[in-house]
Image (cartoon, rainbow, N blue to C red; front, side):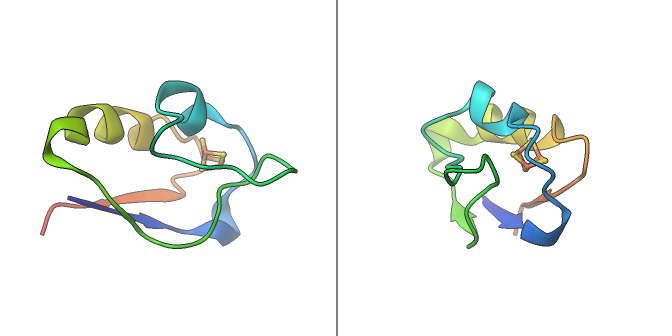
Length: 64
Ligand code: F3S
């Protein structure tokens, strides 16, 4: 599973990081770092929930 990060949509809510700090990294201003995220099998449920918690829909889940 891959998370496609839409940095332009991020408003720094940090809900992703609060749920999965090992997966979602923020910069000094609290915005998500650019670049897609490959998620290991064991962390997929956690990553999915954290991505869905973003109120700006900045984290797109790609199941392919
Ligand atoms: Fe940004 Fe959404 Fe996370 S607004 S910091 S991607 S919860």
